[in-house]
Image (tube, rainbow, N blue to C red; front, side, top):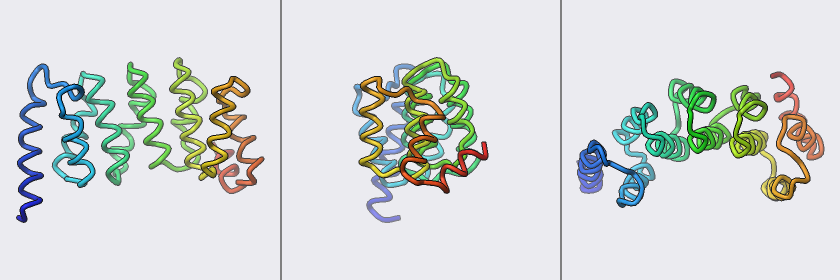
Length: 183
């Protein structure tokens, strides 16, 4: 094992111990930055820890585990299925928003769970996250995403599947539109 691996293992062991305490908060303790460092390094034992934390009773651990997994690791179908489940069933809207964002990076059109969240989630921010995740999956150009974000923020449009279809049609992203219509 080289020095970097030893340092990562030592950091992981220390963080795991800190996290096991009842007050093992991820925020406000410096732990978030350290966990992020392990995720940036794609440290596999940390990945397994984050997968376990998807089932934590604490929303902060579920939310950060979803994000750290989804934005730093290639996820297996089994892990993506857990994220799909959390998007529909987690009681915390911030966790559901993180799930939508991750599925926008690692999912595939038509992403039925995102379509479901866009149509039926009780929280408007989760619906908005699902909307932009679907646009991410369609590979919408960044400038167009910003333009559509401004429309949503101003109230000019409301996030919906019809709006996603309109945008894809306007941008001539017919392959993505056809995939979305397979839902």
